[in-house]
Length: 259
Image (cartoon, rainbow, N blue to C red):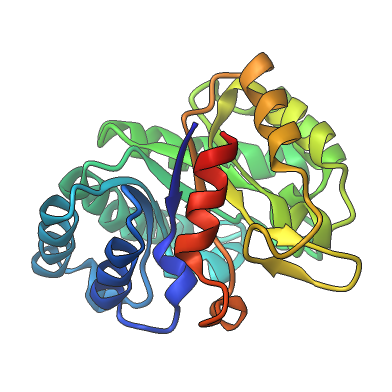
């Protein structure tokens, strides 16, 4: 498995600066976490591509800054809003084309939206996925604690209705926050996992840098490699957990030696 670093680790820096900092860690694989609409201008996206190319970095995936409001964009019982929102996400799909990325990460519908069944949820997700495929891009559903697909039962139901081309992003810290069994989630996502978001945790904290907690990465990497074909694992932690005493370069080296 190839280990990299998400630009999301450096939020709220501008994404060009975050990508430059990723390069300083020595990482060769990344996820671009866009922070605002102006960063989707093609000129800006090309500036990101130039930085990636100059440092030999492969952009695996793109993470929309609109993830927090996807409930209102796609799952708000409004057909005209849905059409507009799909059109807006074409900006992310186009960014993927420029960057050479294959995947766009989706949080989806908020867990509190009781009116939205998983069948209806997935019907809309399928529409977004089909538009993404027109650009050669895959939609990747992430397990996120505040959203429907952060939970095993909902993911099982999603797979009943989802197009086969919809992928998954498995996120360790989100599984811990939602109280979900890590290996059960991995098995549900299976061969559809596009990449893994890596972090560490202990009895009192999550979103720690790998090596600062208690998680057994060797066991997880072996489990995944024995059963599934997953190419990338990207460190994604919150910036406040990165310190001068122990930083991303150390975590990157640790994981490379384990995998």
